[in-house]
Length: 472
Image (cartoon, rainbow, N blue to C red; front, side):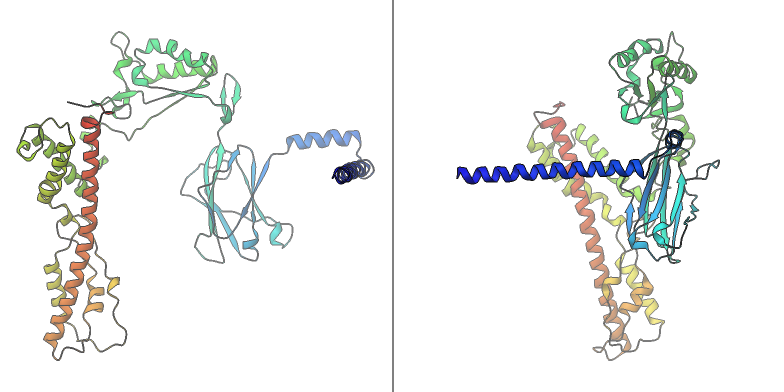
């Protein structure tokens, strides 16, 4: 065994030696070629190195049929070039590429696209490309279709990174170290600098501020009462600073401390007590401009009224005392909500149709039409769908009656007169409507059960669980 091992070891050493010799010969061969075939004058080397340094970076994207890359992020830098080339799946097709990346000197509009021009030194599809210069930071979209079809066959996004600088030095995105300050807790404005210095001294080069505007009664950092005014808690001797003073501070942080700043604005996060919102209620979600919210509003209102009744002791004889503190109380709440409270308000009716009214209309239309002729193709009743009422009125959903007439107002071999045929067609149509209603009702009841279970789970955490706050 020892002899075999020794032979094997020698063969292994010989193989390593041959590999080393081969690599050495390859290295000498490449050195030979570079010296005799590619040797340049010193001046050529200098000019070539300068041109290489000045040549911008180019990134190539291959376009392939059916490849939508919206979930992928391609991070590029300002000043780079992008070349879009055809992949093998697009060879031989007439491909047109569109992008909302504006031409140099033009402003950006997210919905404004332009067609790109193909460049090529030959008719070969492998040599065709579209060339884009990335002149401004931002997120830009592209898509393409081919062969005179408007169907998008591929798409994606190009993300051009911003160029950040602090204290005259560039700060790359990979070097950012950011810390968040809750603005509403910073106190008087003249104390900010000392508090923010902690971030600088601990190595952060970016500070993120939560909204600095005046907050609503909830005091949530993201619920604004006055989008144009600063938080009164920043006041110094009764005087609230303005945005220009904040700007001066952030400029000092940028130039002297080399610390960048970023701030949430959240202009659409408006508090209920905002004077602007009361003057312009059309700017928020309400039951007039968003009637689809009626079921949710009705559910919230019902739960709110039930909470008030529980607090007054009105449900104590049903097992729900004002102070909920055990599982038995939670079971009683679930039973009251599913068995009494929610059935009263009949939320599913906002999604259902009035069977009798639609059947009557079906009969009226069917009587005024010529009786149908026999056909060998059986009707497909699954085509008929319930259409919700846009205003979500009770029992105002409907169906496509023209489609219903084609499906149900048909010739019947089991009927010997028109009245019998029409009656049986109507009965079949009525059963289908009841089936549609039942399916929607089952779905909505499932949502209501989920809402009740979530409510009970919240009450359990806040009032019953040992790891919760145990609100009395």
